[in-house]
Length: 137
Length: 278
Image 1 (cartoon, helix red, strand yellow):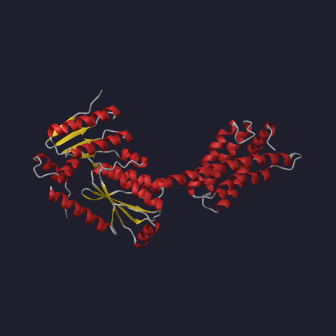
Image 2 (cartoon, chains in turn green, cyan):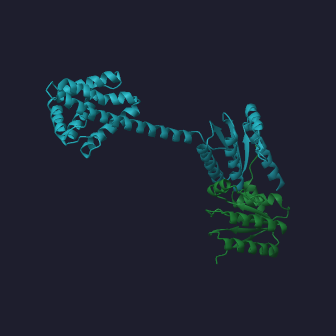
Image 3 (tube, chains in turn blue, brown):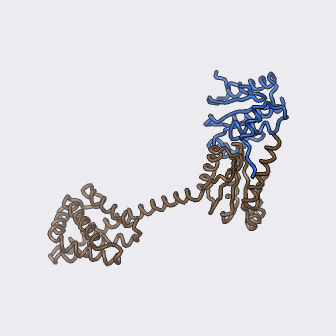
């Protein structure tokens, strides 16, 4: 069975889903992530779904479960890169994925996490945030 | 009473032998009906072509406009309707261009024994040709209207970048399902393309907000949230605010501002807080 790789970058676990999200893959990812969060003690998880054409209700629910599980383990989850077509379909289906935080891309996801996390975040994350920040007039 | 193949051929001969006076009279009638909006020379060319079309269709044995032998004639008639429709002539004016052939034929048909019978049969043929013209005229006008509606849709839903990370959609006109869909798709795509975490939906130009319009706006906001962008609704006029409350529409935790300026100030202040915190 295919598995989704989980990468650790600084205080964040990055999951980029590049394969079709079958139910088994989703469940496996949920287990893997829980183990990695405990093993690494990170403060944030970013799940990139920009390669996904379809997000069905099961995947949606699994994402919500992952978010809840990681919150219990003191890690914030951000789902990033949802395609417009996927968002429209989910809205039409009445699935608004409550409890999941979202961002447009990985960069903004990292910015969102670092804005909410403790100040001892690694430098690399702070730099990313500065670039994404909007200048005030 | 349809033409018999024999009558059709006799008519083809008649159109052939009286070509000159027939075309002249026909052109004269059409020029009068169009009141000088097309030049006589151009109309003369059109009627000459059409007379030739009728003649070749009839001599090939066409007894109905829908016959295979009349293919070329039908193509000519379609082209005529298409030109007239685009030039802004009415359906009647277009059809009269064909009907005038009957009057022109009446002048040259003579008064033989079976002239009346022949004329009535030919008249029916011309009627159907004119009806065909009418049909194509309507079809072309409809496609023109559909094209224009599409262009209007394109025109009326721009997504503009207001600031670094802030896009705005100024909605103008009534928001129906088709337009709401276009607005939603375009807004979401722009959010991805510009990676803007904030979108302002300005409804200053929306004449009325009912439950359906509110539903469309809410769906757009929820979809944008799913993608990780925040939406602010601005440009709510006093009258609209009262309607929204009277209808019991709930915008929930979606930020609403009175003017676009307020919305932009709100977004920038939230952004400022965020960057100063990190």
